[in-house]
Length: 323
Image (cartoon, rainbow, N blue to C red):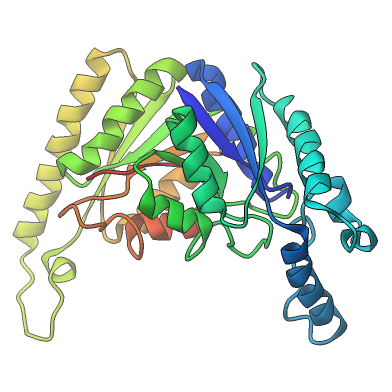
């Protein structure tokens, strides 16, 4: 497998490195590190806005650690004379340093571009990338890489699986360093959601990891809200729980026949809450889920379950784009 890790020089972006390194080592993958370097003149424009905010209301201030670590970019005085070639040189040095954090090394590339999504997409296509890994926060430290920006656009446009992590703090470069030993796989009973299970099964075998399957059922009242009156039927809800448990047990039997250790959880209520709680039980958990679930129209992502998990969980999340 070929894994592309995108870095922008900030400690926020480096939060993805531990999980990506573990996955690469376990699967014997080839790692590519990529930085998309903006024109320094454009970068200066938002740095100046930040400086104005700091001098005034502070509304535009960025948190410490979200600024790029490229040497020239850290010295505000030199940014006025920094050229694109200088920035690219600094980025290449930075990537060479980051490559040392991968046991088998990594190929590195710094490319110019003011549209990171286009540059990442082009690089992935040209190099046969099979997994894109990135932090959900980048240089801005306020979600620039996700939710309405680069990672969000990339997630919606690419069919390549994505490994994402939300930085826990400013010093997030070592987040996720705990060895991954369990893959949490949410299922809703659909064949689309099961694509994530097939992916997780392969990874679990290579990493000698356990699988933790979870299915969350909703009551008829929650499933079908409306202004009209309805009658809650406890018997129907019990049937839903039994069906969910049977479904997971069938998956468990198959996986255990392949030599994989499996646990199953059935809950009732809101899926995202239980997925997050289960994943946050241990720092060694990795969430693997499809971006489409029941209905195949994005229920698991963008405004729904996966979106909420991405926003709230600090565990790495491997999203499989289905459909």
